[in-house]
Length: 606
Image (tube, rainbow, N blue to C red; front, top):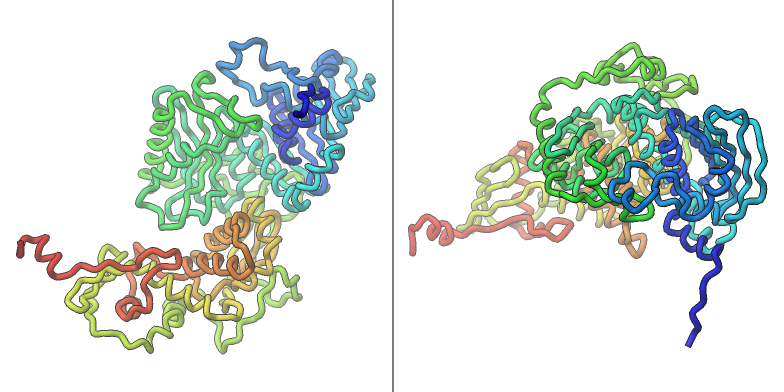
């Protein structure tokens, strides 16, 4: 039997570091939270490549004395807890006393810090948890900590890091989450010497949303505010007409801390019930404020999961607040930007909605000119990752030819010999009513049409035919979606999407599959990015089939809208002939009511 051994302290620290430092993005999150707790008003985040070689976080907070700096890297050292009663009401971002010890255990660190009012600062060098050097130095008030060579002494973990592009995307997302939760702090994020984003730090959540999430999303948001039973909710939610293709634009904060919460997600989405199209999701930035004793943040080392002592009160407060905002949607959104944000964007307008529609820029001190979005007349060939071959057909489908595309999607069904039936009409803008063989047939028009398009796409061995847009569409994506798109550009090209980079996080969409309405283009790209990032298909063919589900869904006619009888008749013919029975996901596309069943329901027969 193997004997039980006590691990050496340095080995125990390396193992414990895995709970806190999962990847370079974890380092950025922990150090930014420390800066916030130190009272910083300005925080600068810099990193190189994917963050593993170099991360530097600088702040103008309270700094540390030489005595505090000397013990800051010891495990369980913290300035935020003094006894067990402090665990009952944690009001700081960090509190475990593990972050610096965990980070230093798997990296090389240089710390420069100067306490407020002190004549000089202190410089420390720490490697693998051991203090190598500690000397007085001249430095600004506050703290600057540089982390190099993350996981240099744990090669087993180093090899599990993803590509630099993927890790960099995670680093930007982590910094964005922290900045969005603290609009009173000015945050600058720099990657490889180039500024990714900047927030003015004017304590206005609308400024932070505009700076971090972009004008397009910000201009579609509705302000929301409410409180009940000690729970305060405020922030922004998207108009139902501006639903997203995924949940990647949902941000939740509890007492300034970014969190993931199925409870809050459910509360928001239930508030949109019966207002969003199937497959669409609301965007939101929700700030939840409640007593420290009413929330337990000591659930997970990363502190992104929390527990609420009274979940129903929290759910009800969020649901009612969002619901009230949606019911008042007809009121115009008039959120003025602060003077600082106006200067940053160099805009003559003071509201989201009044900004010029053709200029897309984000706040920055970099003085770069705002790009103007125009169709390019002649362009040099781009990388194959972002280009799609020109479609091999005689005419190009403009944005107004949706009905023609629908006819092409069902042209093969025209030849099907179907039994006699009578098209009664359309009910509730969702179901097709057909009298057939002495029965009443109710057809889900979207599901049936989706199947027709999906079958055509699957049977075709060529690339999906695309339509060139007369005017390009600007698509803004989250850092995660941007990384996914760039890594899978060739796949998207094969599906008929032609995208070109157009600034940080933005892409110009110049072509899309011929069946997809341009109004659904952004949602389609977002959904495809989610599937590419999270899909678990075993092979390339199965993966392509899964992606075609999304293309077919976006191309199919939509429930909730009235359609031409000719389109409905073609779908009905495909269903009554037996050509279409199930949607691509396996659900039936129709239900049948016999005359006997109807007679029995109305007591015409016993």
